[in-house]
Length: 300
Image (cartoon, rainbow, N blue to C red; front, side, top):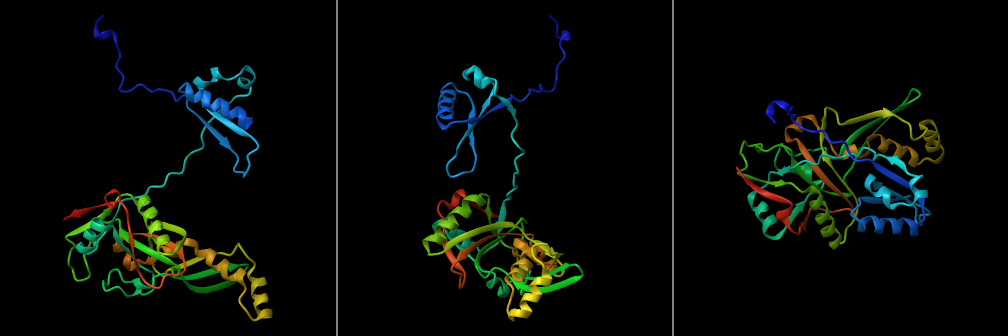
């Protein structure tokens, strides 16, 4: 047979295997099916409602597992498709710090976390932000406009990096090396362990890229409370209405932790924040296990 009798394709599109779901099984039934299907090399999963004590279970299985079900259960099968998964892109971040600190990190796992307050007085003019954590918040509803100012970060430690692969100090001096952090997830876990060993309870971990604005202002329509009622209550009690206080903070939300003035945009900053109890008094040195699995030293 000659080669002229064939048509060659760049690729062969293989259809995805069908997946089915069998709903409302007892724990005993789903457990028996799960063990039997696994023993025969069939891909399957168990799904249950997020309840303390689940009353029923669902079995999700591939098409080749149908033959292991009873006739009655086969008639109850429904075709199943997984919902789209939300996938976050967690980038590699770079820390431009003195080489001695980089070497200490890889030699003994030492890593310094800073605070929002300390960032207001950094020696490097490019990194220093006199209003670190500051936000101007404006809320309006039905013609009423409320403005307030707030500072966030008093309850947090922070680690800052850059998405840039080069950096110059304010005096024009360039760094000869930097630390490339490629496993942010493991770093977060290690910092949490070290902070808790030092007596801090980690409440939340925030991380993301900073964004840069001209006035560090958040402005939105008020939806979470009635400002007229809050102001009336404050007049009557001569005190602060907490609905007003937290409602105004909600306008900014966690974005307040990542907002910086536009003139600092050259930093292209990415930051990690650990909210803790009790509040930190100053920066802290934590100890990281397996630093080589988290970062590497880049020599320029």
